[in-house]
Amino acid sequence: DAGVIQSPRHEVTEMGQEVTLRCKPISGHDYLFWYRQTMMRGLELLIYFNNNVPIDDSGMPEDRFSAKMPNASFSTLKIQPSEPRDSAVYFCASSPQRGSYNEQFFGPGTRLTVL
Amino acid sequence: SQQGEEDPQALSIQEGENATMNCSYKTSINNLQWYRQNSGRGLVHLILIRSNEREKHSGRLRVTLDTSKKSSSLLITASRAADTASYFCATADNTDKLIFGTGTRLQVFP
Image 1 (cartoon, each protein chain N blue to C red):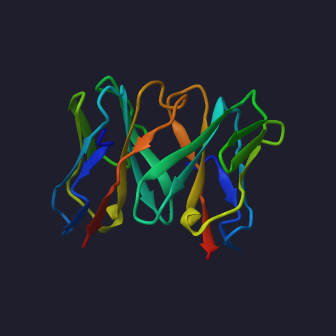
Image 2: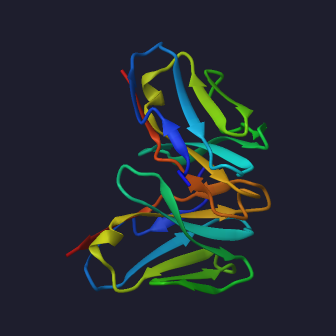
């Protein structure tokens, strides 16, 4: 099992540009979570999906952020336009069943730097 | 928003010593989980303890949970240099979400 796969691993972009982060969850997992980690705010849940349907996006900071899960094996997190304060490490995680009743499996993260 | 607060924020010990990290939380929980994060990596699940459990063991890990005090502790016995990492507690209520704490940075010197 390859685990949760995220791409790219590193992204450097300029303010105002569109950024798309990608995630492939573990096959068979019904839940997918997007987190953001910064020194100031720690690990924050942005949005999560159950069976490809967005369930809770209350953690998405602004309308500039959007997430999709077109099928069970792929999800994207898009930031448009990007701002320097979006610089962070973005993690995708998946879980086989109820996300909080079971362990979550994290990807290696995407380190985003917005100049 | 963060539910759990870990204490201490940072801990440095020698190999072979025990490391204890504490987590306090604010609301009722269904379970509490501990995760490890090595530098530049994603989080890795260590152990889950349910609200009706008081203690759980896994290898060199021992976790306790006191729901009356809304606190948990993680004990790593006979620490190794490879245990150097950040450790996070995460609380779960009856939703699908985990709320992560602020983390403890553990440094184990050989």
